[in-house]
Length: 300
Image 1: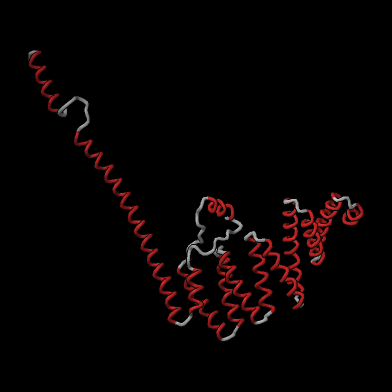
Image 2: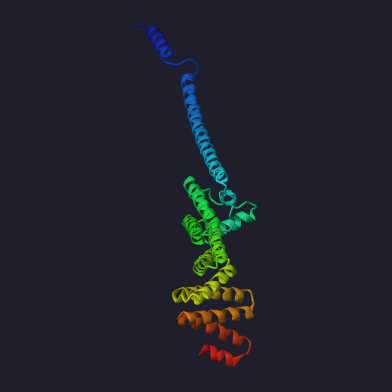
């Protein structure tokens, strides 16, 4: 076979095995296939996202319908007061007071101009809320204050467990109103103590202080010595915190007044360590004012 014939055959074989166009270039068919795969993947993710959004909207719509049906049922039963409370408490905007855990986040959100919102209530919580509001309303109309108190207290504890302290405060206030209207001391004592602890968690020391002081008065009147000791112990903490706050603000007289209250409350509940610390601070304040004899008495 001549050299020329062999060259022609090699050239023909090369043309049959190679794609049209430039040697080494990608096949238009393969490029089109890769492009279609990428497009399908993007469409698939987009369809997934749309399906998730549609599901969220459907759930929200169902929850809204459930909330409306529960509230309408209370009106049909002739419970307008329960309806008003249910409508208010079931709103996500209700309760902007931050808890101890999220106070910094809530403050930053408020500075940014946002509206503070409570978490949405589950359907189970909404049903429980409706039931207990109806029980409390019926008990109030029948002047059965202990049953009304129990229904409100049940919801207060429920919301405390959920971390919704603003709603818990709402119901303990209801308990307080029921107890005071019926002149029922034990109920007022329990509600006041609970509110004092909640106000501490919500960083509202003045309200906490007034509640604990009321607890102390009621416990002494009812001769419930354990409750009185508990109230004194809570007051020791609140008074000490307020004294430190007054010192930081430069209010020396205010600090001295709170340290004196802290010392007295600590002595009432047998907390000698806190009483000694309060006396130490009072002695330092006396030294700053040149009251050396008073300082010596406090340091003793």
